[in-house]
Length: 533
Image (tube, rainbow, N blue to C red):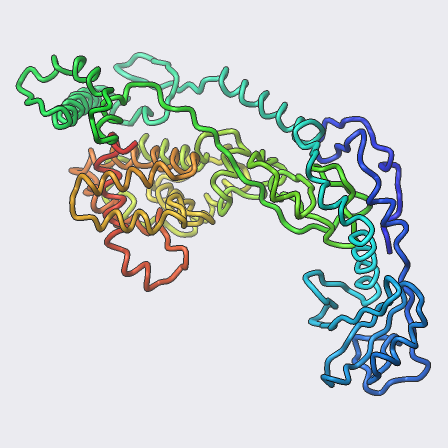
């Protein structure tokens, strides 16, 4: 039956909980129309029909004509019956009286009754919902067509509350820098931890770590100059370092054709700020009691499946309004049930981080005590222990304990990282860009190949791009310990290729055919990490 009125009809004050919020003024016209809708009237058959299917009741009248069914309905609005079709015996028709005429619908049953998309437990519910839809769409067709022209979305309720919460969380995030404490040369040192600059076990002990850092810095500097020299046609000599500043100024000139070279030259400039946009994850929803659309403020009519709800943030809107809602979903942690197998952008927005916590925590632990581990990422850890860590992340989030005291084998942590990336519903290199990266890997010219890969990277969603950048910087550091762990960029490409890239059609044959390109893409990303990112 039509939903009855309750105290929310007149509106209420703004709640601090978006889930409980109701607009102070909402448009009741469609609600009033639903209340006026004709009620269903079942026309029962006076005799028992032997041919009646077990899922129909006394409204079944057997094999009768359209004309006779029309007589049985008697012209009463909302009257209905079910008959077996004379034209197609074995099929069933719902005859419904509405708008002074008899409407005939082919009726189906697969455990539930339906004539269209919606499925109902009973024929009576199906007729009730159908009458509501017919009545409202007949009486208010023009109103419905124009109801999205003056939305309240940006002004009232849910969006404003989420915006306030988001601003508050972001401001706290900026003011609270993460810090790390470690030992070096028997003196306690403290400083802010920045992504990509995490202290390694070797770096924290001085000696080899200090030499490694200095060597890396010199090599990076030399690489920048060589790229600039190539772009500008300058020959570098032994005093190449003196040419860096002038070359860097020249690198900003538009005459340098390669964006890759220009990006490398200007690497020290501030990175562009990323806005992590996220589309809403709308799913058809049945609302109990009166509900209205949080985009247009109009009543959501019907008995079931009246609209859609975002499963990540809880926004309730009409199905037609969902196409107009901007990509500004701010996931609610209460709705995020797990960490693994959760969409990457959804997870980072819910936790207000730039990357998934699993990636940060696992890489931090691996760089702390596992860079010298032989066969790192190639050797598997115990699957039972990997599953234990997965459950710990799903249960405890960033409070999960993955320290050496709990899991001494670093291969377990490496296995967890691979499992997390492999289980993403949308891979780090998204389905939409899979073919672009595969085709880029097939380009024979090395420079053109890198350019094509770089173009693909720029198309990645911001959260995916940042996660990939952070992971490649880590894998580059892994390759610096190749003498100990025997893992170079090619070996890591073999391991991470199928993990980071998956064909959209999920075909084993496609994956097998593209395995070489998958490996090459990841290998090139590692080897050219400083240039590509």
